Length: 225
Image 1: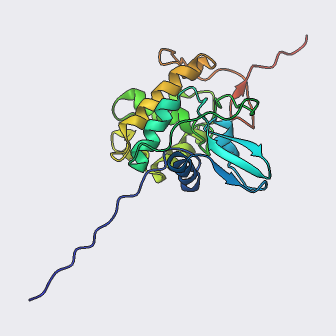
Image 2: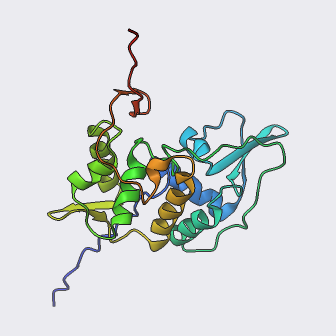
Image 3: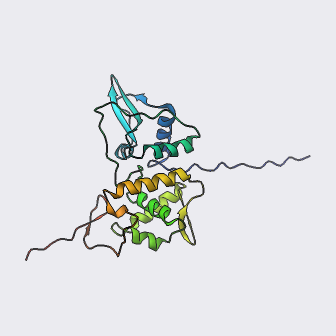
């Protein structure tokens, strides 16, 4: 008798937090184990620090790295990590008084590599269904068009989005907790940046020059007469 063997392909875990899978693994380790001690030269991805997702402080001869319980959406962040880890994780904590705090980055609040990635995900989730690329670009008119496209490609590669004939939509493997986190951050950050507001209408690209670092347009130049 011949026994047929069927290969089981394990679905790729989407990279929801951080610039890459290594950053997400670090967040998961901190979530499961709690604060960890590392040598002073230990590298912590700067984007995770800027996003306010992790904190670090010195303790004797070590650097302590931990999830930052001061994050304004800490509960939603932990829900995403709990779904990824399959456990409740280590108890949430805040670093000692005096530890440097980072305001959540407007450009990369989830630690993405691409500057437009969060806004792409935000508008796809807000659409509630597939969104056409032309509609998406109208929602983000103040950056180079290739930046949302580059972010889209990366997010598809990371398993966050899928691209089909009807447009972009959230991939099947993405948890509801992640979508709730993105929406919560969008609402929180809209108080600092009205372009993230769900009710803001975009009539078209504003006049002005593009800023090379952020990819945004700066106000038009005023020429002296």
